[in-house]
Length: 184
Image (spheres, rainbow, N blue to C red):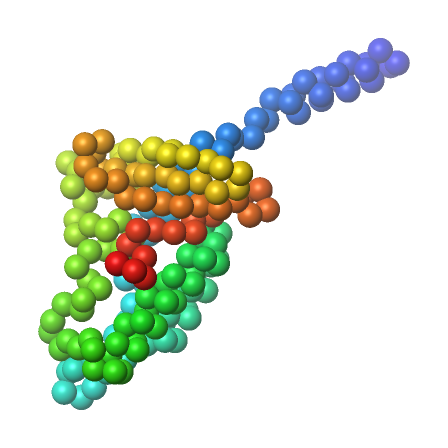
C-alpha cells in the first residue's frame, strides 16, 4: 500500500500538467470566431427605431438598447468599452433624430443599415455561408500586455475587419469592432 500512494500522486501530477491553457493567440482567435458565431443572427441588436403615425422616425427605442446591452453583456464576449460604443451609437442616432439632423420614413433604409455592424457586410461572400465563422481568416496583429488587435478577413486579399480586445480577469473580451465605431 505504501508504494501505491506515491505512484498515484505521481500519476496525478503528470496528468494535471496535461491540461494546457490556450495561448493568447489561440484564445483571441477563438474569441473572434465565437463572436461571429454568436452574432450571426443578431444583425441590428439594439437599433430599433420608433415611428410616429405618419411613418417618420421619431426616436430610437432606448429600452431596446438597454435590453440589447444586457443580452450582449451576458455573452461574456464583450467588455464595457464595447457596450459604451454601442450606447453612444444608438443614442447619437436618437439625438440626431430628435434634433431633425437625421430622418427617414418607415419604408426607407435607416442610415445605419447599409451593412451589418457585426461583420460590416451586406451578405456572406463565401460559397457556403453556413458556419462562416469557421471559414474566415483571423490574423493576430499585435498583443501588448492585456490589449490586443486582430483582423479577420473573408479572403486574405480583402480589406480587414479590425477587432480590439482587452484581457479582464484572465479572459479576453472584445472592446472594439469596426462596425460599432461611433466615429464612422
